Image (cartoon, rainbow, N blue to C red; front, side, top):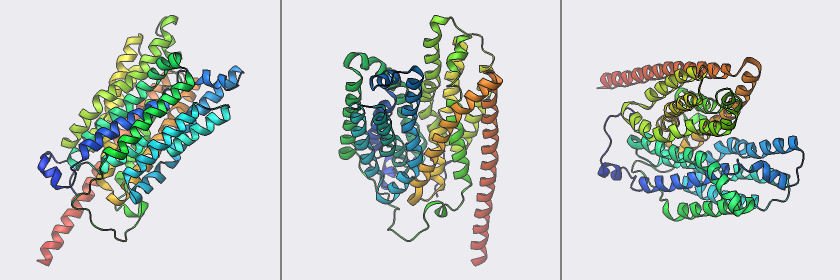
Length: 429
């Protein structure tokens, strides 16, 4: 296995010799497709309650309740089915899964614009998560179809595209919906995803690394992973990443209201929410490239520790701009986690089950995305809003310590295994 800590990147000729001639083009298509599908999944945020009302729900409390159900439905089914799609990608091909996801998303987004009841809206949002998964499928394809020495950088670029979609989606939806109408906005999103579908079909090329052999009988799933410690550590870290990102969401507007005048609350709250994502967009590729040089696990430990430290002063801010600056810095720190998590998994699982294991990683991230707001809302309501920042900071620092210890233990076991192999060779010779 090639070490993830190598300090030298292969030359283009070396890359082609390994069978990765098309990885840059594949990356570009995956970034575009992931951006467009994430935009489509999030653009309804500004007008979702209005659409629910158009579909016949009149009671204010019911509108809020159905809006939450409709928005969360996609992420529920996406998290549940990610390991399945990863397993099928290992068996039938990663490109085929991207074709399925982009076509499924294009159809379901268009049908959402034709809904006639709130039940249809929720059912189609569930279908979007079930049939979608383009961004997670892109992670699998890029992780397995990119030279290992460039894996962190490539995944960082892809992560930037995904997070840019999360930022741009609500902005695009809020701008377009008043111009062309809510239903037409969904149809336009479906058409845009269909463009990504065409790009996936005609532009993505399946690389065949020179070392790839024929199909042989081998263990499947978890049984195929010789040492599960790195994988388990990355599943936990993925949950922590999304937990830290989402824990503040339920309290942000109320917290900002204590810092700024009433007429500025919604504007500043929106900037705070997007500040962390913007920081991650700017840092993901750079931290991924750094991780390719100094080791992905080293960057993970550093990012978790810095994130934990940056969360503490957020509990003591007195001005809105201070919170914005700290959330932006937090995003810079967190931006290195997603590409490094994926890289560590890719380096430590057999290629034949990489998609399956990365699917579990995606499900773990969705778990953090669900637990973060729940825990943040509970802590903020029962122990005060500052406790959300302190609690999340403690979790991040414990995560850094956990990864540091896991890395040390894994490195020691690798050294022992190498020494044992060398001793065996010496005795045989």
